[in-house]
Image 1: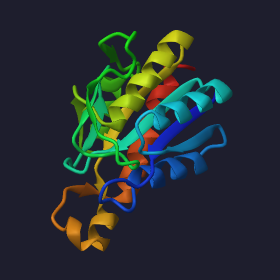
Image 2 (image 1 turned 180 degrees about the vertical axis):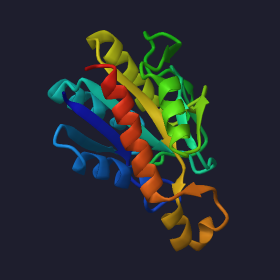
Image 3 (image 1 turned 90 degrees about the vertical axis):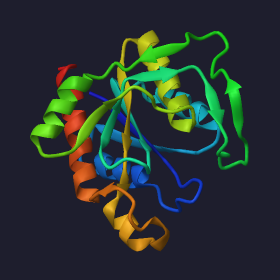
Length: 202
């Protein structure tokens, strides 16, 4: 089985992105897992992702993104065909209600077994919720691009938002008081998510 996990590099005011550390740690935990760190740039993130999907043709792909406003794991249900954000990407570009793919459907649903994942994480004491909006920034763009490819190729994939790591919050005074989870808990959550997804393929 081939598994691809993706995260993002630093962006906005976050000089360190916990998703990058997470996917590198997940890749180190299994020989069948590869990781990819995506640029926080509209269009470029999808382009880099598609290149790797076509090259590696993974059976399972789970993309992780940072949501600094939450203190739990958010399993994303829906990707929408829309870019719209006042926050610029790393190239300085903002987007205003433009489609990701002018010919694509308005929304796509995650292919991951989200409810099983939620149950498993909660049983392990990890706070987790289903989410019905991945926003309209780069995370949603990657989620939409990935899901469309998976549907076309008959593969499994989806998107998960994670909070800040407690270690990052402790090391950055500007993040004091932010919701977070320990890096070890984020890694455990990532492993459980992959286990549940892999079990649907075997």
